[in-house]
Length: 251
Length: 313
Image (cartoon, rainbow over all chains, first blue to last red; front, side, top):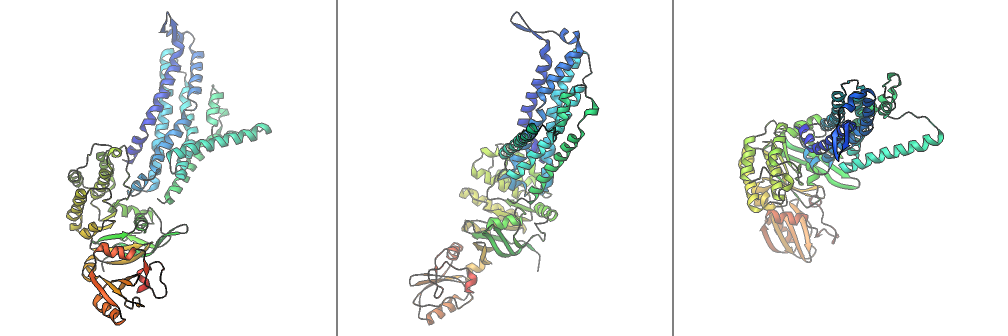
C-alpha cells in the first residue's frame, strides 16, 4: 500500500523521463534510415542491411552518449521526488503515526525509486536494441544490452545521496539542490586538484559508464572494479545514513 | 488499580533553552475522556507528540497502553491501537478521501469500513474530491474520519474541531459520544473550545508553560470549585491548600477555591475582608482565572507574574 503511494507520487516524473528517453532512443535508432526526398521524409530500410556492423556500432555509441546521463538524472529526480515529498512538514506527521517502522518507509521509497530508475534505463535502451536488431538482422548488440545496467550502477550512489539529502534538508527541492551542489563541488574540487598536478585519480563511482564509453568492444580486463565496488558501497551507505537520521528525527 | 491508558511521570521536553513541557505527570485511566486545556504554546501538542513517538522526552517517561513510545517495537504496537488527529490535519493533496481510506485500511487491525462509510455520510464528506481541493473544514473531517474508523482503543485528538462549523462540531461530538465514549474508549483531547470539553470530558487538565496547573474531574469543578471575590487591605494569600489561584486587582482579590469555599470566605472575613461574591465557576471561567497573567496577591510580591497553583498549596 505504501509502495503504491510512493509510485502514485513519482509516476508523473517517471513517465516523463521514460517517454523522453524512449522517444530519444527510438529517434536515434531510426534516424539513419530517414532521407529527405521531394520535400518528404522517406524511410529506407536498406541503410540498415547494406553494412550492418558499423551502423550498429555507430547507433549504439550515439544511444549510449545520449542516454549516458539517464541513470544520473533519473536517480536525481526520482530519488528526490519519492522521499522528499514525504518529508515536507505536515504529511510526515501523518505518516509517522501509522504503525510502520521508519526504516521500512525509507527503504520502500528507495526500492520504488530504484525500480523506476531501472525501467527508465533499461526500457529505452532495449527498445533501441530491439529496433536496431530487427532492422539490421544483426543481434550482436552487447553494448546496448550492458549499457543500462552500468547506468543503474552509477545512478545508485546518486539515488542514495538524494535520499540522504532529503533526510538532511527535509524537503524535495532542498534535496535536489543540495545533491547537485555536492556533486558539482566534488567535480570542481577534483578538477582543481587533479588537472594542475597531473594526477590520474580513478573515478569515484562513475567508472563503469566511462569504461563503457571508452571500451565499445567491452574488454572485461579493463573493467574498473574499484569504481564499481565504491559505487555499490556508496549506494548502500547513503540510504543507511538517511535511515539513521530519519529514525532519530523529531517532528 | 487498573492500568492507565496514558501515563507520564516527570515528563519534560526542551527545545534548546526553551522548555515546552516541564515535569508533567499524568495518569489517564482507561475509558476516561480527558480534556487537555491550555493556551497556545502551553505544551499540549508537544505532550501528545511525545506519546506518539514523534518527539523524544528530554527527561521523565511516558507510557501509552502500558507501552513505551521511545522504543520502536513498542511504538508500533501503540500506533496500531491509538488514533491521532493532528492539529495540522495535512494529508496527501493528490489523494481523494476514498483513496486515503483505502491507504489507511491495511495499517490498522481494527479498521472498520462500515464506520468509515457511515462517517463519510454523516459528516457529508465529498469522497471523490482531491484532498487539496477540499475546504479546511472538509479536510478536518477527513482527518477525523481516518482516525475514528480505526476503532482505536485510545483517541488522541489535537484540536479536532478547529475550522469546523457549529453544526459539524455538534455532529462530531455526537459521533464521539455514540461510537467511542459509549464503548469505553479513552479519549485524550486538546481544545480551546471549553463548551465542547464540558460536553464530552469527564476529566480536565490545565497546562500552562509546560506545567500542569490543575487536574480534576469535571464534575468536581462544577460541584466544588468556587470563585471568591474579597475586598480589603493586607489580606493573606492562601492559608488554605484548597486555593488553586489567587490574583489581585487593586483592592480586590479573586480566589479560586477547590473546596470548602465558605470556610475560606469566613477566614478572609476574620482578616477584615469584605466578601463580595462566592460563586460557581464554569470551566471557561476557571481556565481564564488560572492562566490569565495578572498580579498575584502574594504578600510582598505585588506585580509579579501569576504563580502556578503549587505556590499556593
